Length: 142
Image (tube, rainbow, N blue to C red; front, side):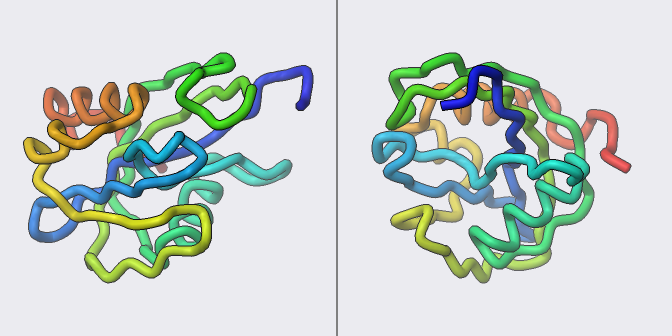
């Protein structure tokens, strides 16, 4: 375990039908969340977000907007001790055709209101609540 926080990216993605993508993952003790991951050295935040989504879901994102920044310090929701700075985004995808890699067990496209009934990790619940209030009315990522 490094002795410094790890910078990560994740996004709440909205499909053309207005549904959002949730994934279930062992890393978050089988709770539901959004795809994302660590930023590689030398990679921009935007590059990391686009890469992580391509790797984990096969989706290409566009219309990227800033979401809330959160911090997870040894969260009991995560499968091991870790300190993350969670850079969150709101984004769109032109498709609901998801191809998961081995980091998630399953996925679901659901309405934002339906997502509230899922057993979300607390960080995803915060991101979803942010989206329900702000939608795409935040600064666009350039």
